Amino acid sequence: MFKQYHAYLIGYYGMQNTGDDVLLYISRWASQHLLGATHNKVSSAGLIKCNEFGDIQAMPESRFRGHQRLSHYKNALQSEKVIFGGGSVLHSSKDIDFKRHLIKLAGQKASRAVGVGIGPFESLKAEKVCAKFLNECGFTGVRDQQSLSIAQTIAPNANVKLTFDLAPLMLCHQTKCLVSIERNGIMFNFCQQAIDPFGNVNNDNEQNRIDMAVLAIEQTWQQTQEPIFLVDFNNHSQFGDFRIHQQIMLRISTDVPITHIAYDPNPFKVLQRIASFKATVSMRLHSAIMSFMANTPALSINYHEKCRNWCEQIGMPKTYQFDAQNIDPQQLSQQLNQGVGTGFAYPTMKPEEAVQATLLNWT
Image 1 (tube, rainbow, N blue to C red):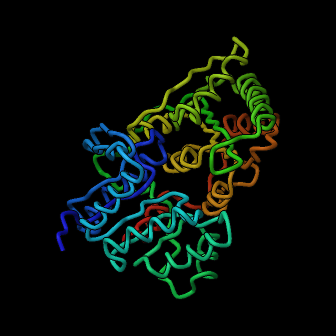
Image 2 (cartoon, helix red, strand yellow):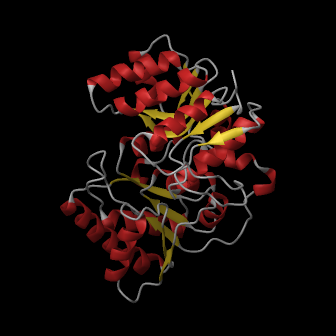
Image 3 (cartoon, one colour):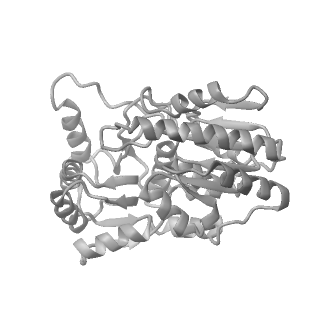
């Protein structure tokens, strides 16, 4: 067989989303340094230019219906294995079937899904297709207990293990260690909450969340006198965080010192920036995960089951968790004020433990 690549890396890569940028970097690094897959092909929606990544070319633009799918099939056929690197990837029957096709073309026993979430399924068909995928894929590392329970129920004989999100492996790079600097300010990150796979939202809920965000930020400034930073983790033209952050900034009192920080394609710079804040309030999952990695106290605004699973997994205090549909501005600002004044509570899990759990994806 004409195998040109050791591995074909598949994910939501090249879509200007910090969480996916992290997953790509780790998948590429780990496949090379932990699996010995030194010659890889990456599936990316756009051209990536970043010193830490090296240039990654985008998938070809579609010239006819099914062009990109055929390109995926070609890349898989030319690879010894497929690696699905992180994310909530196992919930849609159409997408799971596509993944099954890829590993059949490459090599089922050698292929793996790492640091992934399973469900909630869009249909009973998706659940059945996922069971087939788990039985066919050489190894699946799931990032939370709920995903493991689902896997054990629908595919009890599959090679599935409880591992961890991939992101903490960023801390393994000696040349990329965080620089200790004086912490200043409080970071907030908000995003839209989709109500279906197409990204549609409930406009009333979105407006209510913006109202609560404005109140929470103004009260936080009044109580802590800490400068406020709004940080984008997604730069999508329609679903990007900047749309929400712009609406918030337009309504914030001019007395509040607030800075908007745009999406940065370099995840190491993002991690270092998070390490410079006294605390973060995170809606995006990987905003919370990177705060944990940087030992930055984090409050989590949970908009999805994956956020709640993360908080439970690391042992985040219940008082630091908020429902995205019903944020209590006063309670949130009080937690920040108390933490800044007398010290924050930290998760029961340590970043060093998370690194060891993450390595289970690759051993």
